[in-house]
Image (tube, rainbow, N blue to C red):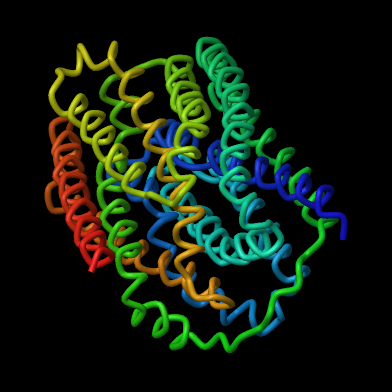
Length: 409
């Protein structure tokens, strides 16, 4: 195996994969859901659906373990995942009834989310097994920069196309062009993955009970679980209705919406290097604590300002969210994997995602009890996000201080 060549393949495929995730997830797909006429609650549930389905990752190690993480099986699952993301384009031709559209939307969204979660852990395991330890953070940072460059170019182009098509009365054609681009990126991505080396994975017993038991009983891993769990709740409740809020209640244009997506990705790309250096010695307090402060300010702006003013300050909010995104991405792709016991990384990663899924599953239930389909109701979710990030800040700071005291003993 030529390490440099395979590294480049993994990097290219990962860039295309994560770029497509950005394109075909809660941003433009939420805009498409608004076009289809789905309710605020339905769009909000969709925004967190991919995290809720993290629950199925607990079965991924067992499922793929039976096939020895077969490349053929993994890529077949991945192809279904990508095909499902394009199937949304057929919904307008199926029915004009909003209820039927909602049903089909969630059928495709569920297939997309479940197959995505099943395949996630294997690709992470392959990549982390192949990469040298000293290359992992650098890989994540470079990938973020390249991914965000692709997303920026796509977002600007699609914003212009969607606005032009909408002005001409052909809004649907603009969205169909979007799904075509998603299909092309997916085709190139899958082709690269087919021709990429799959590292040898040491097979360990992968029973579901073992996948849960070992990481759950590992005291050193609990801090990681708490950080990820609280963060997932905070970010989930804060962004659950963000897309529908800016599109439906602030009534911004597709071009402005595209620019906001460009801003968030540019901020993430620019700050990736910054967080990479902060995390170099695995001093995660230099990443997590500032990340919490940035998030509190972002959701504070959304909560405090009137809608008429928010239209003009949204770029600041999206810059802050982009900064958050690059910070947590470094932690998420490194701390979880490196906190796991040797040869059991798959179990640890899947268990962490399982916990994230359980936490996020609470969000639709919580929001349903307070949600009345209005701008003010959505602002309540921004306030809950602020409270959650304060909790995360206090928890991490206190647990980090406790750990330092123990190290000095």
